[in-house]
Amino acid sequence: MITLKGETVFLRALEPEDLEFIHAVENDESIWEVSNTQTPYSKFLIKEYLEQAHKDIYEVKQLRLVISDYQDATLGLIDLFDFDFKNKRAGVGLLIKDSVNRGKGYGKEALELLVNYSFYHLALHQLYCNINEENINSVHLFENQGFKKIGVKKNWIYSNGLFKDEFMYQLINN
Image (cartoon, rainbow, N blue to C red; front, side, top):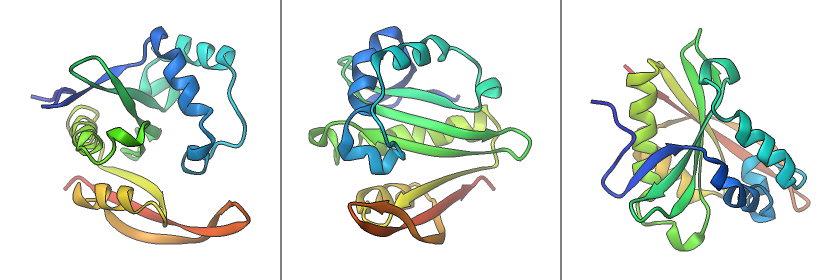
């Protein structure tokens, strides 16, 4: 049975009550490099986004889920993006917002749940992700889930006056 519920976390749809959390995430400049964000987002824009969040992945080509624990704490977000039904693939993005919640297995379990959902419910053939060369924790997370490094985009990210490489990872459902 495919479920979005694990032992310590579960994945759920976005709710209007997530406005403050998403606003904080999208406006946290320390993660802009990871999320490819260049400017702050207003609460107005995020509210509009949340009002559209109910739309089907086949229509909007994206699915954003909240990572929650069983005490109803919102821990982070996990996304499928660039959903390509014809070629049966999608990109994956994952963020545990607060550093105190990182390294506790929440991201690992959320990624396992999303991979299973993607392969067995959405019938995808492959998932991919792009990881900044300096993000060693994400490299380990995705490699431990079976993602394979398939390439390097040289000087891909310009941040703080420096060019950085970005690793390309892929997981194929055989």
